Image 1 (tube, helix red, strand yellow):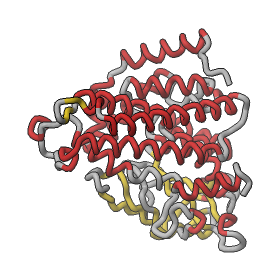
Image 2 (cartoon, rainbow, N blue to C red; image 1 turned 90 degrees about the horizontal axis):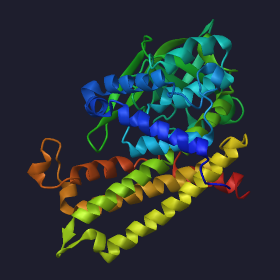
Image 3 (spheres, helix red, strand yellow; image 1 turned 90 degrees about the vertical axis):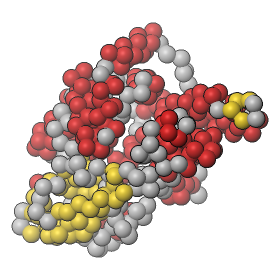
Image 4 (tube, rainbow, N blue to C red; image 1 turned 60 degrees about the vertical axis):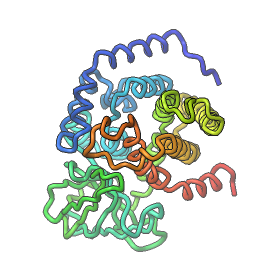
Length: 392
C-alpha cells in the first residue's frame, strides 16, 4: 500500500484548504449551534457545498458526483475536520441517495436525487424500533398493500432529525413468511402524510436531536417503494456498510485528540501541566497509537475501494475500533476537566465556571455513550466480523 500523495493529490489538498479558508464558516456554525436555527444553518452550508460541486462527491458522475477518488475523499474529510467545518446531514446525500441511484427506478432517481443534492428535502432514517434496534430483523412496523398504496402502522425510535425532516426512508414488514429478513421492504415516506406524529426525545446531554415517529394508517404509494417487495434487507445492508465506515470518525478523532493535547498543556496540577503527568501521558499515547493503527486500516479499505471493492465486513472493524477510540478520548477529556466537567453550564458563561472546556467535555462524554450502539451495536459488529472475516 502506497500512502504517499501524488503531486495531483497535493494540489487537490491545497484547493480544499483554500475553499475552507474562504468559506463563511463562522456564520454557519453560529446558526447550526442554536436549535432554533440549526436546520437553516445546515441547509445554508450544504447549499454552499452544492454550489462548489462538493456536496455529493461519492455519487456517480451522471447524477451529480464529481468523480473523486477514495484518496481525494480522504483528503477532503481530513481538511474539513481540520478547518472545523460542519459535516453534512448524512441521511439524504450519504445514505438514502446511494440506495435510490443503485436500486431505484428512473422515475425515483429523477424525482428525489436533484432535491437531495440541492438540500431542498431533509431526510431521516426509520430503522430502529422500540423492540428492534441492533436486531433490526425483528422490526414490526407493518405495511399492508391496499390497491396502489401501502397502509403503514407502527413506530420508529431514535430517529435523528425527524422533527426537521420532509421525508423518512423506512424499513417495514410486508410479509411474515420465511426468515424475518425476507419479509422487509424499503419505503420512502412523505413526513407530511396524514397519520404521522413525531415525539421528541431529549438526550442526557440536554440536546433534542432524537425522536420517536408514529405511523397510524399512513398511506404510502407503491411508487415510493425501492426495488422489489420483501427485498428491503438487501438494500439496507448496502446502506449500513457505508454508514458504519463513516461512523469510525478517524478525522474527527484526530482533531479531538489534538484539542485534548492543547488542553493538557494548559491545565495544571501541583505546579505542573497535565501534559507532564505520567498517567495522563500514558493514556494519551495509548489512544494515539490505536488511532494511528485505525487510520492505516481505513487507508487499506480506501485502497481496496480504489480497486473497485466496496466496503464489506471491514466496515464493522472500523466501526468497532473507531467508536471505542472516540469514547476513550471523551473519557480522558472529562477526566482532564475534573470537577468542572460535572457543572451544568448551559446557562453560565465560561468565565462563570472558570474553565474553558469542562461543559463541552461533559456534553461529548454523555452523548458519546451512544456511539458504540447506533449504526448496529459493537456486539453485533463483532458477530459480523467473526462470521465474515474470521470464518467462525
